[in-house]
Image 1: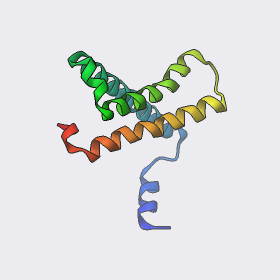
Image 2 (image 1 turned 135 degrees about the horizontal axis):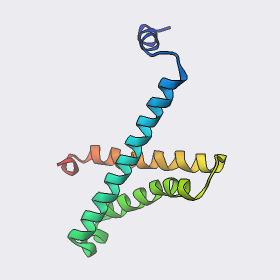
Image 3 (image 1 turned 180 degrees about the vertical axis):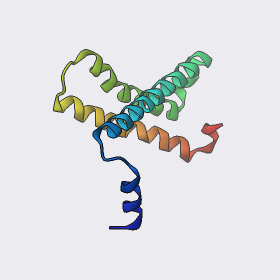
Amino acid sequence: KQWYQRRVRGELPRTPEIYTHIHSILEMFDLFSLFMFMLEILLKWMDNFADFWSNGWNIFDFLVTVVSAIPEILQIFITGSGSNKDVISQIAKYIRTFKILRSLKNPRTLR
């Protein structure tokens, strides 16, 4: 094993509770980022609704945010755990990553 693998594994407790806690933190971060993306779109709409739709990147951001929100909405209405819901959720989370990467590509959007 590589030295860094032994180091990381040695520092994390091997109890399932720690992984549940980390998963909960990541889920909260995921929902927070989705909320921030939705807030960004809402503020752009309030600024100039017609201008929003004339920019291709804004349309891309809107589509990514809507697709990312679908699993969260499904989670509210669908109870239980189904493989279809899990697959849709994973795909939407990967799509949300595209929006974050696009923001990093264009430093003007980070200001």
